[in-house]
Length: 528
Image (cartoon, rainbow, N blue to C red; front, side, top):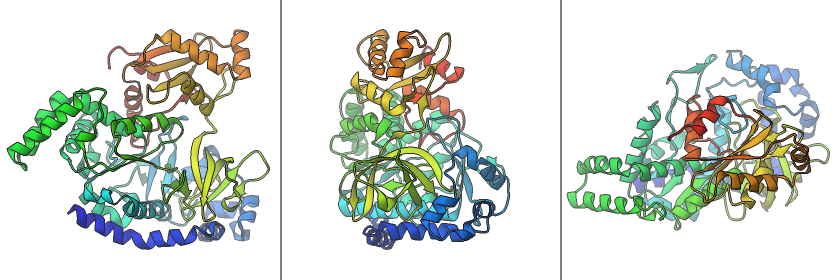
C-alpha cells in the first residue's frame, strides 16, 4: 500500500513539477502573468473598483495605484467579506477562514478561496516531486504530517464562514487520498479537542509506525514536544502500545519493538534513531528563531536529513525547498511578490540582488493585495533567474519601552552569543512595565548557572544597542530579570492553545513586546 501510494503521488505531481521547472529560467514572465491573472479576475470587486484595477496593465501600474497595506488597513474589506458580502476582495467565494498563530500579537482571520488554495498546491506538488526524485528512500515508509487538535468547537464559524477546512489535507487537493493512506496517524485525531488525549494518541500511533520515513511539520517545536512527551510518559505509553500491537503483530515482534523503544526513550540525552530506523526526512522551519530547535532535531536523529520548510504562512505560500543550493526557491506561480529595502520603491522578483535583505510584500489569490508580511528574507542564490530565499526574521517585532527599539533579530543574536536560544536551551525575552520598565528572560530550566547570571550576560549583550545602554545607564530601564522555567515552550504552547489557535504552525518566539498577566502566571506557576 505504501509503495502504491507514493507511486500515485509521483504521477499526480509530475505535470505541475514540469511546469514549475520550465518557469525557473524566466521569473519575470511567470510573475507578470500571475499578477495579470489576479487583477483581471478581481476587477469587479469592491477592492478592485476602489483601487482602479480596470486601469492596471502592468506590475508597475499596480505598484503605483495600490498602496502597501498592513492587516489593519485591509481589515474593513476582510470583515465585510467574512460577514457575507459578495465580491469584496475576490470574485471567488470564500471556502473557509484560517487564523494566524504568530508571535507578534493576537490572531488575524485570513480568508481562503479556491485560487488561494491552489497557490499552496502549486508549491507542494513540485516539492513532493523533487523530494521523491532526490530522496527516494522516503517512498519506503509511512509519513507523519502535522495534525493538531482542533482546540475549538468543530462547527465554529467566523461571520458567515467555517473556521478551518472541513477536510484533511485541503492544501494537497488530488493527493489527499494517497496522503491519508500514508499517514502514520489516523485523520480522526484532528477532531479531538482535548490536548492530553490528542498527544497520547499521537505518541502511540507514531511509536507503532516502525517504518516512518517522513516527518512534515511547520515548527520543529511541534515535533520536539511530541518527542518530549514520549520520553516523559514512556512508562504509561509502552504498556498501552504493547496491547495495541498485540492485535496485529506476533508476540515476538511486539516484545522486540517494546524493548527497542524502552532502550531509546529511557536515555534522556541519547539520539532516537532506533525508534524509526528508516526516517529519512524531517521537513520543518530551520531559520531565524527555529534554528536552535532544528539543530536539536538533527542531534536526536543524526542520520535524517533536516529539510528547510521555506516560507509558508497562513497568509501566503512564498518559498519552498526545491533543487540544490542554499535557501528555498521563490514560489513564482503562487502569488505576486515584491521586496522592499531602504532604497526607493519596492523591487520585483526579477530585480533582486544576491546577498541583499528585503521586507516581503505579497498579493494572493485569496484577496490580500500588496500585504506587508513584515517577513524579512535574504536572497542567497538563483535557479535560472528565480531567486532562492532565506527567512531571517520579522521586521515588525520591535520592543520599545524607553526608545531602545530592540528587534527580534538583534535579541536572537544576543541570546546566541551567551549560549541560549540554540540547541542548549530555549529562551524567551518579554518586555515588562511593572513595577519598573525592564525585560524578563525566561529560560528552560536545564542550562547550568543561576538565573541571575544569565540575566547579567544578556543585559551586557543588549548594551550593544546604544539606546538600550543609555536607558540602562540613566535608570529608565531596570536590569534583565531571568527566571528558569521547566518546560518553558510547553507552557507557552498550552497557554496559546486555550485561545483555539492551532499549534501546528506555532512559532517559537524569541521576543514578545508585551505579555498578559495570564501568560506570565502560566510561565511562573509552580509545577508543570
